[in-house]
Image (cartoon, rainbow, N blue to C red; front, side, top):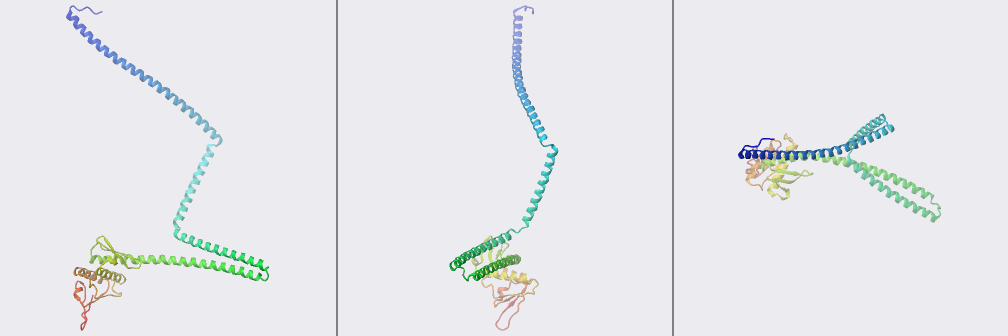
Length: 336
């Protein structure tokens, strides 16, 4: 036991010190108590988790034992070696199936579906026609049987034989006509296909050459559409597309001359073909357009011969490479 303080002040200081120490110990106790409670809760949680984990482990062990038992039973019924052979055989069969599938796809890609459809349609039509003819023959046969019954079949045997012969002849003729029609249809389709290919080979360079000369006359936005008859159907200029019939008279005349120049330059690039003859054309063109048309005619003259007949030579003064030939008397012609 500590000694008693000697006076009141010492006792007061001691009491204060002991009170502070008591407060610190109380706080320390409360903290330790809180830590104890937290540790107890964590301990309880760990025990619960341990119990749950133990149950999970026990279930897993039981499931593993069941799986092993099922595996042993399955192996007893179907050994691993046999199963491995079956897996190998299944893989080989799968590979063969894929190979057959790829080969079938390749054969399908090589087949002309449109031609097969056409032939199938023709075959269906032939079958329908043959069925109709057969039905008609059956009807005629029934009528003959009725007629024979009514007439007692007297003297009609020869007619029946003739009817059978006529039927056979009609069937043979029908088959022959069908085969000839199919051959003719195939020939027509082949010719039509080749004609379309040839037409496309003509259209592309013709369109390109028209646009080449047309851009000299107009600007780089000039484009045309050429139909299957090698005729200019539409003109595009500045993003606006119009049918040829919608153009002005001057524009139609200019476009017609450009098309003639394009055709001549394609068929006679060395100038050895037939010349293009213009008889006093461009009467509907303004001066600015005449100047540009002169440049286009001059450009075409490098590839083909262009002959211009006119009584107004000034209209073609802008054809740079022109050779002017005056005609006697009152006739005036210009050739370039």
